[in-house]
Image 1: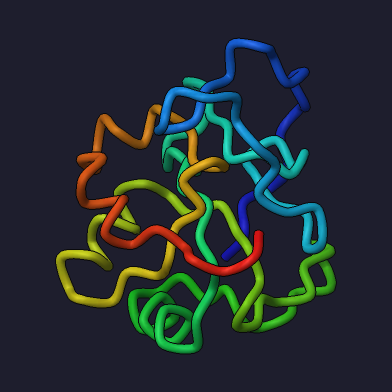
Image 2: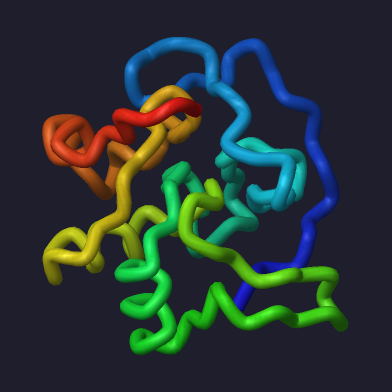
Length: 135
């Protein structure tokens, strides 16, 4: 289920991606991120650590639903249209790692994945799943 929007904090110049560069926008359509500002940024209030910018696949959406986190079913009461393959979305770092361990991890946009994801997922693992398409 999508998280509730949190009070937005401004994007800071120091927000870094896993490659050490400036954190890029993951998606504004659909709007994603813990702060619902399009960035996969976290702070201590984000217990799930929504820091990994992923490109959704049918396989991952089905996997996530089977794990109890249905990202594809629309939830109009929450302003959530549901995700479809090809959408970009901020995923919790531990959930992505779990999907990786189960052989189900979706592609990752490294430039839009916050550096804090490295506390959970090694960079070399993220690089093996780097999205190769057009951002």
